[in-house]
Amino acid sequence: MRSVHHGLAADTTQEELLDLVRALGADDDVDGILVQLPVPDHIDPDAVVAVLDPAKDVDGLTPMNAGLLAHGTPGLVPCTPAGVLELLRHEAVDLEGAEAVVVGRSKLVGVPVARLLLAANATVTVCHSRTRDLAGTCARADVLVAAVGVPKLLGADAVKPAAVVIDVGMNRTEDGLMGDVDFEAVAPVAAAITPVPGGVGPMTIAMLMVNTLAAARARTGVLAG
Image (cartoon, rainbow, N blue to C red):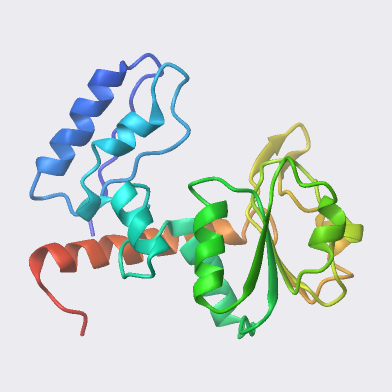
């Protein structure tokens, strides 16, 4: 597998970026395209996603891939949500009938991870900035996924004893990189918790490779062995 990095200047125009994404989509040597979000303020991320070839959209952002996920149809699933579910599967966390709470409703993580949890037969609640009792709602969860981008937003009062906590937050602070969950406070309460860094991040990269291989096989008609 070969990776080509296009590091563009911050003042790259929207049309220049769109032209690059279109060119990569037309390049038969390219099987997967990942646009690193967020983009600078002068660029509309929806416009960038709109020109992505869905067959090469290895982060599952296009409306087509998002629609396939919503309908439970196989497609390219966003890497971080896919990594979250793979972690839960690897650790044999029983999602059947479990109460799962997702904090955050972004297109990239919150909404797709909620859909994947629903597909695994969990009972899912999605919390966001308008949720009235965030800690109380989270404290009901057997599985808690934090993906809101606020350092240490969730403490021990937001975690049910023996819950499984997946921290997707990647917040750069003066004290270094930290998650949305107060790890030191929550670790003694939870049955399991992912660290930041070193938890979901590596899984995102792993699932990007999985998606790229799947995209290449779909384009070439080569089935998995």
